[in-house]
Length: 358
Image (cartoon, rainbow, N blue to C red):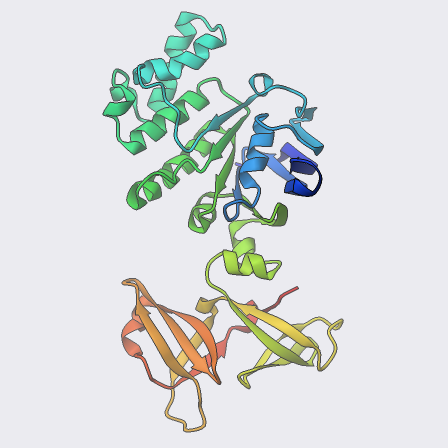
């Protein structure tokens, strides 16, 4: 269970590489709090600054400006080996000449733990990751998923307060990646350790996280639960980066709780529009494809039709053209057989999920 006690506080953290006109700002005034016992994900495209932030927390990079506080202690001046933090890397970094047991025990011995403690703790974490039957194998005798479990066990063995995971699933195939998502989340709940997970994969973030920070161009764009991030994005970048999005130009006709706006297609949408938006003002409207309902029609004045139909097995993705505007619609499996390309359709927008983009 997540405790609303701050495990990590990132306070106005900036990281700049280089100097002068050749300098690159990898992180720009990042502010976020991560709770104790939380599975927290840093999500964004390649080069957005998420791995840089992870490396700053671990101590592998120096901060240019700002503070990092871990359980009320400032840690940015501490070297990596003095921080109560462990990291699982994308490539696992297992010692090829050591067996599974010794790979895990190695770090504990470096901490000057007794032989009895090392033996007991190593066996505990092997059981935790379900690798107790593989303790004598070398890394080259393990599958990718098994190597991943060993890397996790090694990182968990010293009982860190915080575990950092830098895209640890990216080298695995799809089915194994999906299985490891469940295992990682269960492992986090069982250990009670705060996990900070870095990924560019939206599905990973949505399925595993308690909360997500979406990052782009070094700036934190939005922090929230998976539902908040998906259903109520704060800006167009978040809307487009997380799943599929429809974004329309519209004109406000009436504001207030029972407001109206008109799309370029001629559709009149009823939705709540803040009073600060004036009548006649241009606005941007957002809605997810699954929040649009389509029905067949034979009316001659209807100009909307199915332009493209993509069958996905358990669903279908449809592009509806209306006055040259393309609108994405997702169909559930029970509706897939009801529609085909070229058919005229009515569009119905769920007003509860229509949103004005800032």
